[in-house]
Image (cartoon, rainbow, N blue to C red; front, side, top):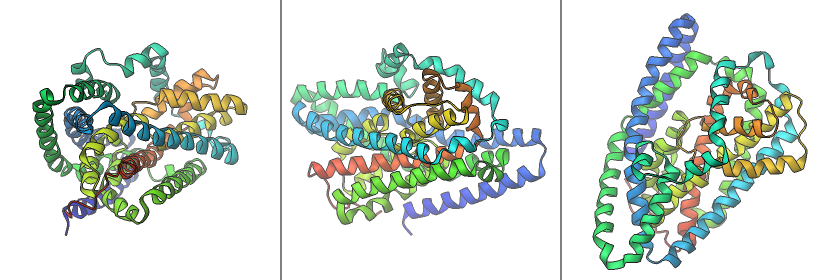
Length: 416
């Protein structure tokens, strides 16, 4: 059996085992015991995520710099970057508009039970909204220290520094070849580490699922059934649009791509962190036939600018909260909200539930009670699973499509 297939099977088994154990604890333990259990079992997920975070900064820096340098001149960098941004902006707008359309059509906010608001969780999120002022947004994007950006895993700041470094390296030509060669070697070493780290994925998945089921129980699916159902309809519609666009460009190679990314999708789904699968996704896309220089350039950019699932959810959640409070928002204001969400959502990849902070800030900006975020907190973990997997799908498609547009998509280079 292929190693990737084995890992997928182990992850699925871990998910089922986590659901079973979590539900068993939920049924038989006291609330205090459940809290202690959830806190401790979640450490398994923390171990896995920290191992992944350990390799994110050197991987993003080395691969993006090498990718830009290998592209050659600034003209090529601009052309490839332009094609990537065309896909990113189109996909983001479609995602936002789809969320807006569905929330206006089905009005899920009307079905939210105001008596079950997670007020304590909401206070934490409302407290974070000050981070999203214009000044803080600029600080969040542009690094004052690349060391600090690496230490805190600020992906967008790393991308900005790496782009400047990569362009400067490409401009120096022969003089910088030794730098490119060295960073290329670093990237390959880090990718080798990916295989070791991914062995911990089933353990991390087990801990994440067991903790949330122990705390919330299976009833949370029924309790917020209407909200979750309409959101899943939106996710399904978004997948349909993305896969259709992918099929029109990739033709009969799309099924092979989906087969390649099954394991990263499941890990992203289970851990609610796109960051957790960045290294593995890089490896799988290169194995699929995408040129390493394209993957190294597009994928890190996608993690900052192409968050399709999160985009759709942020529109959906913000307007659902407005509906729950009976706040009428006209079409023009809704479209303005879409633009705000496009700007404030950059760089949130890899941070579980960061979408909620953006939603909270947006609500405050448009006179929607920000504490309304408490209404959707009990179900948010499950929504986050789907939107994170969608983010991964969107970035895999974006990288592959740009590779195809550049004539840099080969047949599968490995059958591992």
